[in-house]
Every structure is written in structure tokens, then in C-alpha cells.
Length: 104
Image (tube, rainbow, N blue to C red):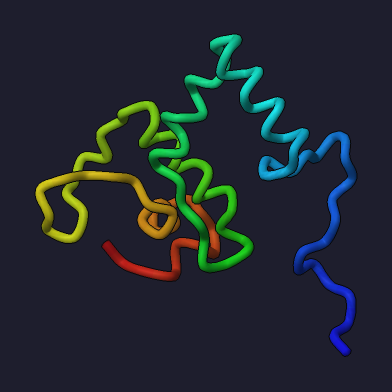
């Protein structure tokens, strides 16, 4: 039998409400009708997961920078478009242990 861990842990509700639950869907619908969900759609368009638990802040930062339409100033993988990624941000100078992962 598996030991208890973080996988599928039940979060305290409130404050954490599962978006897929009936209460979460109700809150989501109310927010759409109230006009307070516009930022959600911009952010979800740039959703990123991280490959390492420590990169959650970097993934969040890259989502916000992309949602704000900030130009990263370089093309992504020689393609004709530019987006921030958590991996690329982790390579910036000043990010401590993150900066050792790559050289740009």
C-alpha cells in the first residue's frame, strides 16, 4: 500500500476550493457574470508547469510576464515568436542556484 504523501492530498476548503468541484464551478460562473474573470483567461493562455518543484515561482513569473505582453527581447528556439519560459528565466544572472542550469 502506498504511503501518504502530497499526491492528491485533500486541501482545506475553504480557503482552497477545487475549480472542478460544484462549488468551484459555481464561483467561476459567478465571477464570469460579474466581469471579474478577465485576467484568468489572459493568464491561462500562458499556463506553464514546472519540471522541478523549486521552479514554481519562475513558472508563475513567466506566465505573468507573457500575460502582460512584455517582450523577452529574443526569439524562442530560433522560431519567429518570443515567450518567456521558466527555464529561460532560470538562466538569468542573479537567480542563484538556478543560473547554473544553462548558459545562454
